[in-house]
Image (tube, rainbow, N blue to C red; front, side):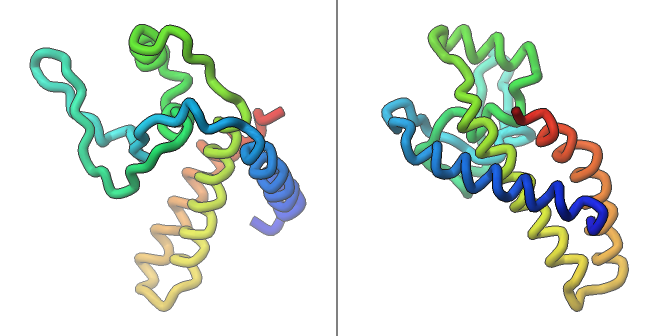
Length: 144
């Protein structure tokens, strides 16, 4: 990560700015959120959605869950059918994206530097390389 230090520090500064912006957005459109929706939804035979694993349930902006799936046309079409007036709030979207990036980075680095087995530490290093560089970093680079 050392070659990316300046970039990550800049991302942290942007994150701090976005946190301040979020404080000024009214919370009257908060909904029940899951926090890790992908992979935690079961669709029954009649097409009804059932959400499982509610460990991190909270009232929050929809973007807390939607950011994972905003580029999935089928999901967004279904969401817009249920909530036709919904428009993605880019400030909240950026907040949850950056929050996820930093939460994951802190987690991976903690595991890589831990006293756990070499296998465990190497797996977390590989996860960091794969998820950060191939998934999270490209998304964060698109923040304007």
